[in-house]
Image (cartoon, rainbow, N blue to C red):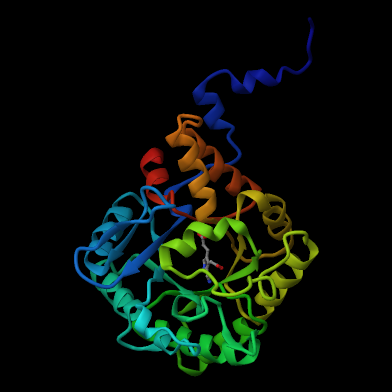
Length: 324
Ligand code: PBG
């Protein structure tokens, strides 16, 4: 054959493939979620998140050190609140001596350069397992936002670099930004879960924190997975209200949304490769049906290719080791 163009020329060796790779995943793109528990020397493997642990602060510090040495520069904190601290107001969420507040301080003291992001939502503190305050069987918006504001300010006071509201109440980004300004936390960022879908893929996470909703589901605040244009609206509103980084969640079943958002906004875009997405790969790998290392790199690179600048993933450490 005489061919004017042979596309395989650019695929013929690893060096050439690397030279022309359009997407390069690095550990700096990764955010490691961490589940924090009370106690000492606690390292509890979450049954539906094989190889992932809920840890007390002491063990968390070792984990953070290891992540940092592997080039992962950002952690996203979640805490497992004790049952006796749970109620319908979520007040433990802004206890200045609460587990989250102690964890932030400990991490920032041990590794000050590590970027510490904190989950802002009431579900770990709610007797109902909902992200907001419940009244007459409904999750009330405006009172919940007041609680989220107190929670965010208390995380900022403890030293968080970013607060990450994952609740999907209306108006919370603007309210949180205003409160951060009023309290002079002018260096604290907001990573908004702006397009967060009501997804079955959060199942293992709710096991990790014992935070499954006690009644109903989260469909009155999280988005309907049938919708695309709504994701743009949600994201644009969060940016107008002051979000520094926006997020699409989950990631792999929403690559179209990630691309749509990336093409539309000018702030950094993150995506959350959620617990169920991790669990799927783990389960297939445990059965010998998938090569885990290859699956991890392919999935995370695909999420970046779709447009995510940052990826929160339970595979952060694993991927960083593979990328070394
Ligand atoms: C709760 C929250 C959830 C996740 C992050 N923050 C669960 C939910 O909305 O029910 C899910 C993360 C994951 O599945 O990995 N505000």
